[in-house]
Length: 526
Image 1 (cartoon, one colour):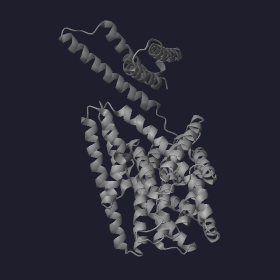
Image 2 (image 1 turned 120 degrees about the vertical axis):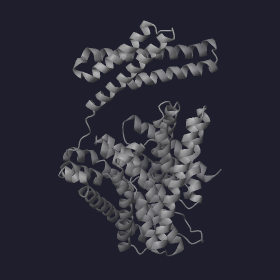
Image 3 (image 1 turned 135 degrees about the horizontal axis):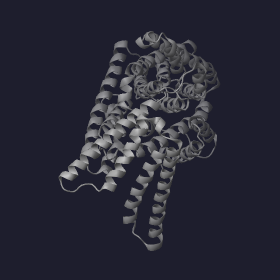
Image 4 (image 1 turned 90 degrees about the vertical axis):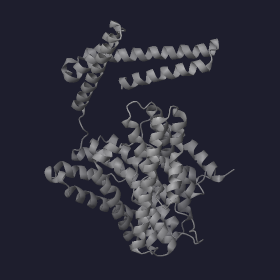
């Protein structure tokens, strides 16, 4: 049986099982899965590190980045587009060059391979940064910037890695040649992603059968990646652009019936791939460290702290320079803006994207020459990932110390709910008039029940003091009782199938409807 398949299957089962255990206890998945992967990788039995780097890049990284893009918002990113693009492009370039320069001071490796190390470590990790940022209760704008940066800089960093490997394979390359390769990779990647995303969005919009349409989206990241790479573009950048395009199209269509299904499916896929990515990185650590000769281990011991300090310094200087040059900082006289800059500067954890990117560096070039210093790059990358993930746990305490707090959305939510309640009342009135004109008026009990619920919401939104504690308790009891009644229907339906032989063809659609009702009640309860 194929070694890569055995590795992925075994690692996936272990990673997801541990991920479920960790999530149920409210912990972050990054550190536990890295440690578990390292333990499994050191054992003489069990799955081993994947033998084919390119397969891992396509099978794991492409759909993982695509799923992250589907969970992001193009509109939210557009609101913070300037800092996101500055961090995702400018900071990635500065980090790549800075890490390469620092590396060359200690290691006599080819310049292109030093740039490859810088490109691998340039992207921040979307999973770790997003989880820590939300747990730390950061303001919405900071969270959007961090999530947008970590999403877009994946494509930028991996494009820079591609350019570095091309230069390393060629032996030498002029600045003009490097610039052309980078520009071509970006333009082709964006074009393929935008075109593929638009086509998929149209298919989803026009399709009457959502099963094959959503199935097409499931395989889309693989096709987009391969097409972009075939035409010398960035496959990861194509996947990111396509994911953002599809997500925006789905959320822009009020009646899109497949939105819930798509979000649920990709939430599961992304979780599996996140667990697998962290686990694979951990599995590779013992093997890489064991392969290193003594001299190279000494290099890694010097490189790791040096590179980490370089990453922190470059990010700090870049972020504070960016904030200091912005109009917002001058308008606020620096106080709140520079506290936010401190958070942005410290939120630079690296994760599985960097690990998988390093692992994707080929063992040999197309010419047959062995890629130099590959294991040094891998070992340095994996150690930096572990240490920066540990440092990211201090983000919450730092935010509390310097006085950065989450947004108070209470007034905004009340205003939005009032607008929604008013819209529903207006639509109900229009339906009542239309029904009366056609001689089929709505029954009073139906109309009154629908109207009373919206009027209660409208009154609660515009006059929050009018909502007493007794009313809130009554509403919670109502929802809890309604969920219990739905559960009774589910139990009875399953009993009729098991005891009376009710066909599954009848049970499953009815059970699905009950599940949707329970989900709606659970959402309202939370």
